[in-house]
Length: 259
Image (cartoon, rainbow, N blue to C red; front, top):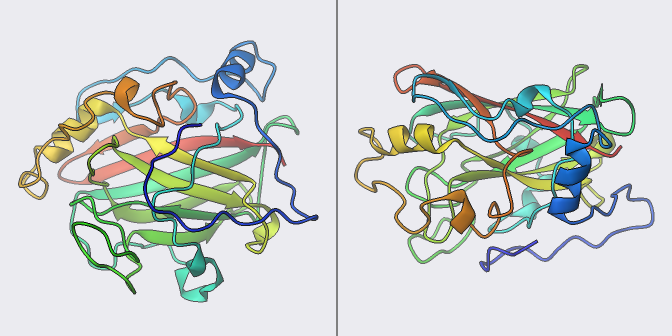
């Protein structure tokens, strides 16, 4: 998988007890998923609708192996040992269009059964394209932890985060990073490291809104095909979105992992 080409923490060393499975190339996964050979079925082709209501691929109801992606940029893995990061609300006062993110983890090796007691770490930039915890060209946020958090999946395999709709930075289309650690074990390598994509019509509406208008639309990457992570497809990573600019949005995604 192509890399972001930006700073990231050193990759965690795999230990003997890690249960990380090595995944194949994205296209192979998508082909197998489409044939029904992985999980419970494949996601629908990408689609979109108006900025109100819902938009996305319908993958929130499917079960297929999530493609592995780079953990960069700016994963700040040092917070994995910080108990205060076990939180649902990760905004830390950052303003933006409200976003509730719901991820459901399922086991593609066990008839798509829900995976409970798994730590899910998410992180993304704020509305201005800035990440917490790093010195970047646009800002120095060392010591800050906004837009980062960890939750444990419940008996239904679900986690829920309260955050804001992510902004953009040059070279990448809108996205959220996440990692999953089985059995709430944050001391071994993540079982899954991937990214969440957002429908372009929703993103356009958000970036036209008052809070995002000063930065405007992302002119550096105009389509998924031009993005260096999602250029080979978003079928299993595209969130399903419901809501509107006034009340906020809810993004859902089913994440298939090999547990």
